[in-house]
Image (tube, rainbow, N blue to C red):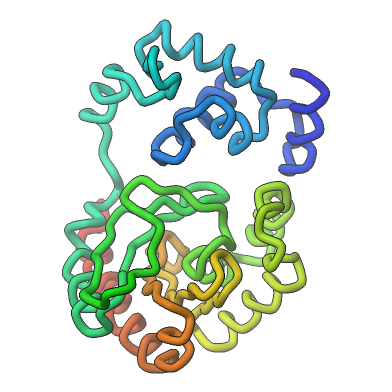
Length: 266
């Protein structure tokens, strides 16, 4: 590992330098988001030097885990990942338990409703329903990843964690927030405190100018596992905040009841 990798690992709260398996896992997870297809983007997102990321990508390519387009030079997940994925199972069928809630929210508020599942210090968008309002404010799609705190859903999840879990997450995410000056540790802390007080999270003009979101955490057996959100133009969030929060809480209660019914061994 080069000096740059070691510095980034320390910033991300790693106890020891990343091993080859951890690097490969981070790269594969990053590539589920279509935005991370160029070497530069993959390396930056994973906190690695480009030379390190390239070595790992080359090894993954030899195993058909990733492919590289010779014309565009972009990387994408390979056929072996599809075969592995066909045998993998989520703990829950998220679309099955939450899609109806997304549809109801999108129809009621005419904005974008989305479901994000917790994955380490990230959220992964697993379902999206776009509303009918002419200006849609969502920049996520299925497979998109966001660092915790970059979005109302991530704030809601941080607020619902135990103190130890939250501090561990907050120790790792600062390098990823460098491109979001409005998301300082203090500002994020204030949003987390507000979410704990109100039972829902909002984030306005912090990720994209004039864009905001409201979210409520989804728990399984008391543990935060996902978040239900509505994103819209900022004024469409602030002028309907209480109504959005109430609707999100109603839908979350429905989803949580479904999770309890479908819990393995339940």
